Image (cartoon, rainbow, N blue to C red; front, side):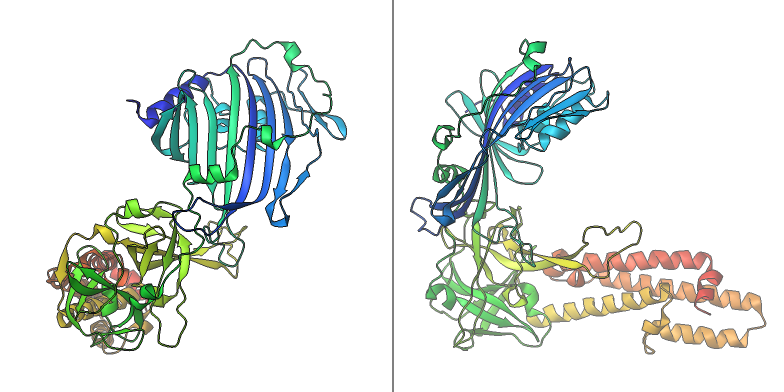
Length: 600
């Protein structure tokens, strides 16, 4: 492999296009929409081409002369779902455009020639606008048509580049574009030109969820470039004339490989669904720690039988019940919590069956890989797995984005190739999506909006330490956190001028009642009333601070110190309380104004 890094190779290639003055390129592209077919893991990938569109583009550019010309041809469509029938688009369709000293552009098409005046300062900006509408290229086009503003700097807008191989005189670099789509770029070693690119992605599937990656359909976009930089172009190279009718497209002669070869090259998985067996379903259990139930699954670790689930599932009740699909109880004998993750490990008496854990998640699944989810089920019911795709993998989590039901929490995420558990379904985040036209800055919001739920799983291979859990003490600590948060809510109600949210038995309510009684007694003594007001705010502030002192010095299980669940998090609740205390300090500087708004 080359001693150069992928980024260095990209930078060198980009430098060949910096300070560009003239350029010619013959570009051939093909877009394939394919449907991946279900096959055994060891079999060759299979796919059906749903549609195909090819383009040929000839572009000449001379920046100094402010002239450019492009010819575009549409290609063919292949609809595999209808017996692989081919339908040729209008043959010979082309567009010629030019900007010259007369400041006009000329457009040739099937209907003839049209002319349009353009602004004298349109320059390369108009070129970029026109070409980008007909040239689908995520790699080379943005670099060629970037506004240089006199600078020779240029760079590809690609993220996380890696050098995959260097064969046949070219570097092959894999990266991601600005949309997060996988990109492969081939760069010639001698000229440093980009000679080929491949972009692939799963399109958004229409539906109420608009879920990306929820279908086996994939779009592959391949481009091949033949180019020359700084050729000796003259005015005659930009003479506009109506070309003769172009020959028909020849799909076999475009130089592209078959769809199956592209699918294999991109490393796309072709198994449509995981073929779960009865053994997989029998490993699932129901875990009930309180009023709500979650999923768990049996595993064997170092010869011991355990159940894996979310540690937060154990909260909210006075007992813990684990039961399998037949309804049999599996009493836990020991409980452990993962340090730094919402994962519980519950030891049970020896039971046959269980799922296999992945030793290295990064090796077991990749971005865009298909994954499956299992949840507990009851006897007589039909177990229903869910399927999705890996969106991103971080050092701690697996982001799959699939909208699961609450009972799936604590269940396994399985990779399709080895049926190994790569993560545990842990948490969901919900955000509000505003439709087009909504503007949060103006306050003009729609009456109805859509919410998006994103689910995440904890990587199973990142857990390096387990903490013994005493359930009685674990739940007692959770009760302390719950009470602390409820008290903060009361202080928050006070600073928001909403005394109605403060229960009559709360300490805050008693202080306010005492103040009211004393204020009536001294209503004609303004200095004394002012002192009482200041004393009230001071008492509330010191009360809130005293709680913090006691709360943050408690001895808590690691879960409460590291969890991303806001309601259970010690750091999050301390941050919440301290933010309210800062407001009380502001009230203390001018108690008359703030208490006046409360009518006190």
